[in-house]
Image 1 (cartoon, helix red, strand yellow):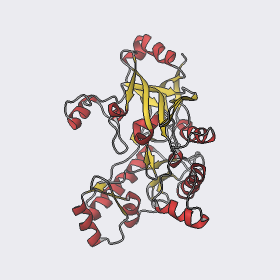
Image 2 (tube, rainbow, N blue to C red):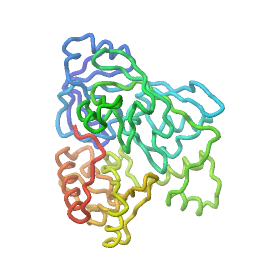
Image 3 (cartoon, rainbow, N blue to C red):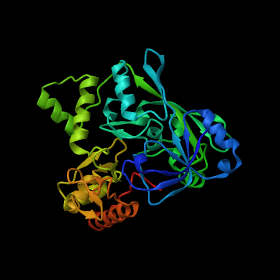
Image 4 (cartoon, rainbow, N blue to C red):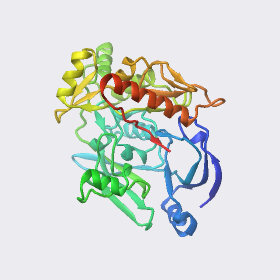
Length: 358
């Protein structure tokens, strides 16, 4: 185990914000976690788990012990008549796993192509896109308790998945308050480190379609029964057209969650704003497109310092200053709060940020 001090975090967060980790340990196996817990000072320190850094806004130097997850490996664990079970180390790049699975004949993750970040972060955020959420393809995960050093395995129910949510995003008390005091009432934020994730990719494979962007691709290409690779290629094209590449323009992907409202609230908003983009969900509620709300308030292309609303997609905030004159976490949050205020004043809806603010 190598303990590094004052490590620059600019290369390790997709926004390209300048900040330091006062103490950082790279975790490439469970052995490294055990070594951290055997050191009295490191064991007692609050922990911050860093994956791909694609879903964080750093507002200053990180004083917690940064555990940078670099556990690698991809394999087919088992195959049944109903599914392929594929496992990946938490440090693997998410998009590379999706590509590898497809190339090896294990389809099912193609709708989640090009989502930035690591495999270990995917269940924390319950990532989703184009009609598929991680929970739809999840089998189980392995993690290590950062207090006891014990390894444990969680199934989908134990992860308490919600929209961009899981047990890993809640502290114990907050989670108990939200979920009552049932077995799910324990939060694991900062208390556990995910080491490996297994995915259940269903057989026979069926395409998940029904999004306007995908329908448009089907019409243009005249392919009405696309295979998994075709869908993967379409989704990569769609995402590249809409979203800036973090290597070129720093960003943390979609900055706000799409809010859900009751049918009554939706009807009320439609009467005032007939063009509002909305989707009816299975539970009767209605999901609104946060990007549409932000755009309607005139934010596209607007800036606060070096934080800017991306001109092609209002849901994305970007680092306009590049690596040489980078945005600060304070500028990003000032812009985010101004957007929240104007959307709330116009629509009565409070947008919730997706990234973790550190």
